[in-house]
Length: 331
Image (cartoon, rainbow, N blue to C red):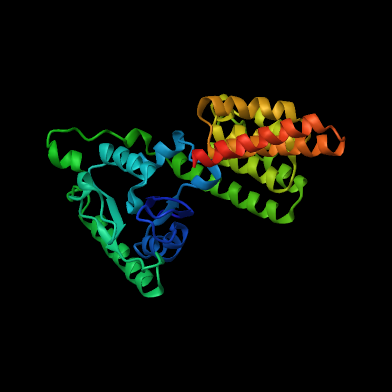
């Protein structure tokens, strides 16, 4: 059994724009080359939320990780809003054991520049070259070992530093083996889904779904991964059926409804797809929402063109263009 301390990593995911206008920054590469191996070298088990596949959905498991993981590393590069929010939650409940890092050319904003953060160095084209990666890996390992040796005496939360009488929340009753076991279970299911996607068959994905307990107790990230795995193998009927079985809060998530609209359109149920996506657009539509709406009207235009319905052709084309323009304006 792996009893290494858990270290939760708070950072952007995938490739993000450089606010300064430089080349895009590959945060997955920073994690794989510098942060993850450094955490492992410190004798800890790295844990990273799968934000890209969950669409940034904040749920109970995210808060459990922030509160209950023994250590945390927060990458403040690009001043990502999600990372700052998560760091604030962590600082509110954990006096120590949180290490902040940043690209040295992008120091934290004023409100955070007093943190004893660890700088690392990206190249001029925003890449983490091998030498810089090795240096970051070593520095992460050293600092985490130091934190492990000095905790809880070394307070790094500004809240606990400034308010000396601020009480430390009692998290002991939440620290159960069940938390660690849930993390392992979720990771194993996601690995099985990755293997199922490689087979490119709906049955392989369905076999994983059949192993799940009640959806009310399954981590939201696992259900979203399952949902998108069906999309990856073009099992659109299964996507629609899965949406019905999801817990209500997850059904209402923007990304989930966007993908439901995508699946309905692929099934030729265009009116239903438009109903779903136009409702999302009214509430808080993203550029993806409008792109999907544009695709539906484009498909309707192609159908009208095939039927030689000139009036409908023009109408659908205008609607498609309007949707795509709205998507660009959202960006």
